[in-house]
Image (cartoon, rainbow, N blue to C red; front, top):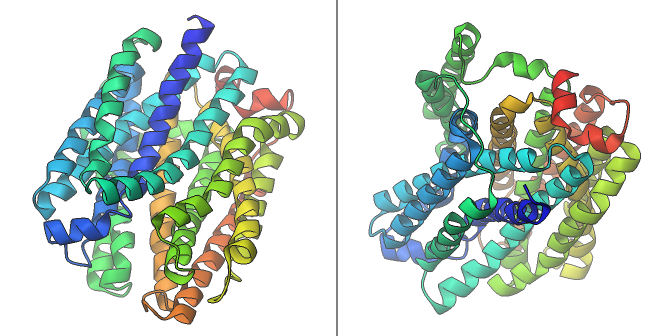
Length: 475
């Protein structure tokens, strides 16, 4: 494929990452209006976010397998078409049930888009390690851009149009992508194999139930029978999935893939990175708005320095550091810096300020995220055999998204126990948010230690070691 077409294709892949993340953040400002118009109860309103995350995290492995069997471009197109349909339905919804169903459909579309996008990226750039590192950096930088754009767009669209437009904004973008894909994306090829539908059902039910239980636990109670029954059901479903994969001739997930050097370790790093980063972003936003008194626009602007540093760090700094020191030291250093930034944020004050309490600590955390994300992502994908690129992409996306959901749910419980549920009580709110930052810092620190203990240091060119599928797949 011509060089220019490859980079245009990368633009669509990065746009996919941008949209998948934007759809998790754009609804925040619109939630109060949605509650009034659709009749959400306060305890159910969070499911406008959770329905998307549960469907997304639960279906990612299936999306990766479908990309391997039927071709990544075909699944990329199917995912965008489903996202488009879900977005239209979410904007037109006139009831709680329809809204939550539409959000789950959006999540299902994202679960097809994310692994197929990474597979296409590896197909386009996997033969050139230096270009691959740059491509992964651009792909990674699209995530924080999507998160921040969601905050801004959600405020603009809700204030000047109406809340359905936070969903309608996806429609013209999806149409543009669907029109452009045939011209710039490689067609790819389907591979022989069967689809393990029962295995897909078991892993989707298990992951979905686990996320559901932890997300709902702060509301239902961690000691409630409902919480533990759902968690037990998740464990049973996931155990049955593992047994089925070990005994089936053509499994959904070839368990031996986890014996590939660094795959399990890199996925663990991605899991803990998501579990630390997403709670930080969520509670930093709440601290700015509910303690410092920022409205939606200033709050979004306050996140811009952090977002810009992540984008510059991923595109310009991370590839150089990987080339100089290798993936393992970069991942460990990044997670350690993220832990340090979160620990600094834990000192936020009720009478604090953006310049003193938020900006310096958030920049340290952002630098850590920029350094840790790219090498752990590249190592996880590069560890698999080329024909299992979709599966590896599904696994690493699942690791990050499920880590994000579980980390946010756990830190929500920590924050609530420390006072974050006392609206209007600034000292109590600050104490709760500080507890969440402290918990997230511990998660990131654990990630740094585990990465140091489990990631292997490869010999040879560090940049190639970050993500070179054929070499890594045969190591």
